[in-house]
Length: 358
Image (cartoon, rainbow, N blue to C red; front, side):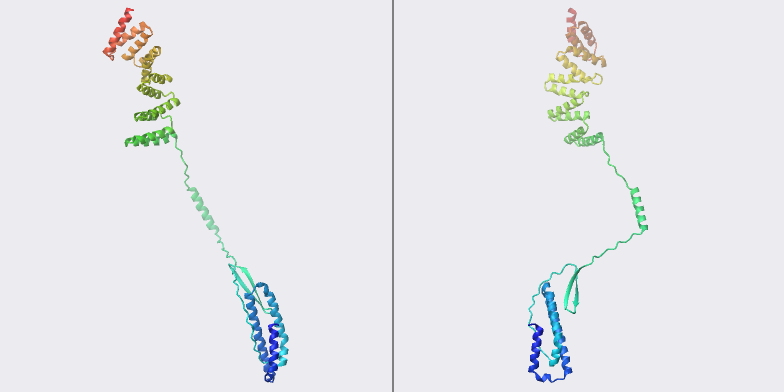
């Protein structure tokens, strides 16, 4: 039995048990009935609203239909109540236990509530929050022209920096300057390191190679010294000083054969290389290569014709080849020089006496 029908049943029972109320005037009775109906509508509406808010959305349509049916039944029952002249009905509605369900509110959404008077239905629609549009300010054409002028001025005054590349000689000079500074400070190790860097950049720095070889030789690192010299002699055979230094190192080590072979590889011209040819001629005569020795001394005398030791060495080379007349002439010329020792002159006189007796 619905709530409205139950209320009508109680209303009929009340009129039967209260005959005094039925004898009241009809006008006041109708007003009270109207008030009762309004109170009932308000009570039903509040119950329906609470039920819609806290109950599941699926039952809202059914509840609305139920409320509409109840309202129609009340409207039909009004003449019955007026006919029986019911003044006041006190109804005690049954308590409804409603368990509220937490509703997650969607972010940035506004709830819009619409009332439906006929069915007392609350419709909730979520509308997204409108995005705030930021209006772009229009830059006047005058400002754009000014900006173009500024950019043009900036581009015209822009300083273009190009990367400059140094030559090998310039890079080597930087390390050589550092080496010179290190030597002035007494740091020979740092100086040798800087020279090595310069030599790697520019291998044709022959004087730097020579100084490095002499440094390592003096420091007791003979292998490293000879390695520098051999590499230089192989790459630049026309530079004869490398072989000359290698020959002298070999002579100090007692390796005369190796010393001669170093000089015999790429001998330079005599002019400007007298030390080379003197060592070469002496070693050639030592190893009884008299023909080569004679040629070498003749070349030396073309540069210094009055050197007594060279004239004497030329006479010995000719004497060993049995060139008697040439040897006697060279011995006699050597005696006229003032740079010979008495021992050398004594040897020359003995050889002249022997050759004259032949």
